[in-house]
Length: 380
Image (cartoon, rainbow, N blue to C red):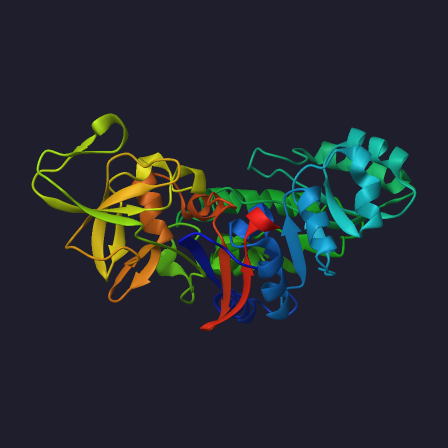
C-alpha cells in the first residue's frame, strides 16, 4: 500500500504490546484483559491494535457497535468480542452468527431480540451504578431482566458489568459508591455469570479491588493516561504509540505587516519565515489549534493564522528548506509535543485528540524501527 501525501501517522505496535504486557503483569492472577479498540482503536487502527493486544496477552476485544465487531471478524480476529454499546434487537441474529456478545439492559430488548434469534446469543448485563448512560438502574429492574433471561430460549447471560464515571480522579468517594452499588447488583444473581467486569483503564491501574475477573483497558493500552491528574499515580510508565508528522510544502519570507490565512487573524510583526504544512481541520487538526506549537529541527514553531481545511502555516525560527520534517505529535531531539499538550490547548482530553484524527491520514505501523504495514484508507 502506498500513500502520496507528506502527512502521516506512525503507530508503534511494540509500544502497544509493551503497555498491554505491563498491565497484565499488574493484574491479579485470574483477571483477564479486554482490549477496547472502538473508534478504530482510538484512531490507532482497530485491526492492528487488536492483533497487537491479543498477541501480548489480551483475552477479549471490546467495541462500541456491532459494525466494529463485524469488521474485526472479517479481518480474521477470532477472539471473544463484546459490543459495549446498544445494538438494535433486530440485529441480534447477526451477532449470534458471528459469535459476538451483546450488551443487554432492557426487558423489551430481550423479547424483541428473541423473536429474531435462531442461534444462541451471549449477552453481558449492563448495570448503571452512576454513569447515567446505559444499564439497569434498580434491583427491581435487574430482577425483571433476570427473570426474562431465564425464560429465553436462545439468550445466555455470559457476563455482567458496570462503568465507573470518576475513576480517573484521585478523589474516590463516587467510585466507592458505584462499586458498592455494583456489589449489590451482583448479589441478586442466583449464579454469577462467567465474566464480571467493572474497571476501565483508570480503575484497572488505581483500584485493583474492583478488577473482578476481567478489566477493560482502552486509553492506557495506547500509552496515554486517562487523565493528567492521575498520571503521577500510575504504577508504571506508559509508552505512547502514536505520533503525527508532516513536511513543509512551502517556505517564504513574509514582510512586516503581511497577513496570514483566512480572516487575516495574524499579522507579521517583523520580517518572518513562514512555512506551509499540508494538514488541516479535515484531518482532525482543528481550527482551535491556532497558536499551538509544532516541532521543526527540534525547535518549537507556532501555528499562525487560521488553520485551513487541508493546510496550516507556521512561523519558523529560521529559514529551512521545503520538505523539512514537521512533528505535530511526538518527539524531535529534546523536545516533545504530546497528545496531552494538544488536549490542553483545545480544552479537551487526549482521547478526543487521537480518535478524531482523520482516516485520510495514512498510518505507518512499526515494530521497533521496522515498517510492518502501511494503511491508506483512501485506497482501501
